[in-house]
Amino acid sequence: AGAGAVAAAVHALSAMAQPWNPAVFADLIRSYIGHSVREVERVKRNLFGLSDDDKAELLWKPEDQVAKMKEAVKANASFLTALSAMIQRSPPLEGAEHPTGVKPVQTLLQTVTREWSEEGVEERRSCFERLAGAVDGHLGAAAAAAASGGGPKPRVLLPCSSLGRLAYDIQQRGYTCIGCEPRALQYFVCEYIREHGSKEATTIQPFALSTCNRFEREDHVRKTPFPEVDIVPGSFPEVKFGEFTKLYDSPAERAAFDALVTAFAVDTSPNIFRFVRTAAHVVRPGGIWANFGPLAYETDHDDGHGHGMEVSWEELRHAVSFFFDVKEEGFVSCLNAANGRSMMQIEYACIFFSAVRNEKPAAASAALKLEARGHGICPIWRCLPRRDLGANRSPLKARRA
Image (cartoon, rainbow, N blue to C red; front, side, top):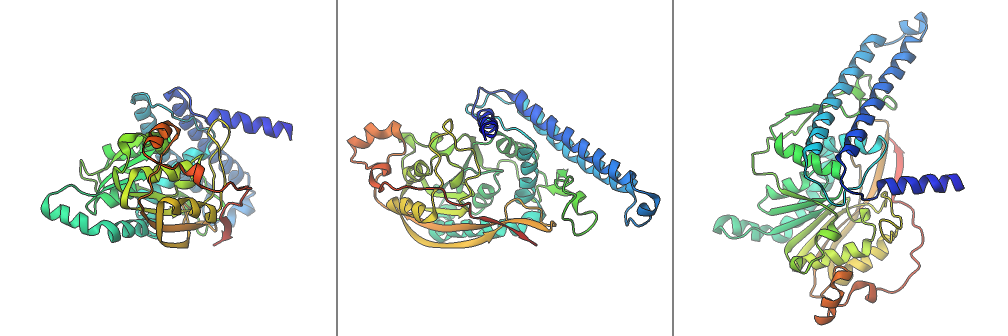
């Protein structure tokens, strides 16, 4: 137990925000590529180690299987190497965390598929269409009036905006969108797509290492060209690097947006109540907050990150309803950056809600406490009842396809 605690502490410390060091990301990507090469060698060793009788029963010749995997790994390495070069050229990013292991890069490749490929259409439809529809339902008339009269477009903020696709889709409907993304790898993919936005300019094969749970022999080496749309120069929305509650807790951001849109975002915050306060701080009275996602709390919530709490939807709804009038809510089963051709999936029970900002003032952070006192603002941490939040199970389940 002691060794496990030490290992967990070391992992948490390595992931914490540290001074900007682009070499960390070069090493991370290099490590993933090396891992991929070793996986190909493992498959080659296993296949070529079969007896002649076993090989005679194979549907796919060993040398062909290995060649296909090598090609797939090479395609991924080409994209990742270009991404690494972009990171090395970047100005310093304040507050960037240092991810470790192969999972962050593998997740990144699968998220590219979800957000910017034809294969990701179904996943996007269940999430993005609901959120965009909620924004249109509340602000569509204002967007139409701005388009016809030349006035300012409604402003939409998207915290934890991932690879920017939701922000892009909503902006295409007539809004001014701004995203913010605290994960450096995701942020740089946004910038990569901004620079390489021609339709299907890049091809990856993100499931090259997923040799288990296949339906058909070449499922793992299928190609994913992206983006599947042609992004006109200047049409990709602004994406800021940083964590939502830190970027938008200043007095200048009070009531600065007509809408807040969150997709798989609220449970990434180390302090979910501060996230709610910041949401109330930036959305003007009468504006909307549209949310879709689980309460999985899959990020590291340790003392270095803040007071991480795994609250239930009942408790989160109570916090939200202090500053917003919830107009619509429901639960939707959804995949997130999944391998659509795998026999094994992770399915989330996602909360979808749309809520209208009321008149109750909110102070976003401790930095605004003094100003809050001067304006009669009641911080939510004083207004919510003290409760033992306990440990809630993650609202995800494994299922067989």
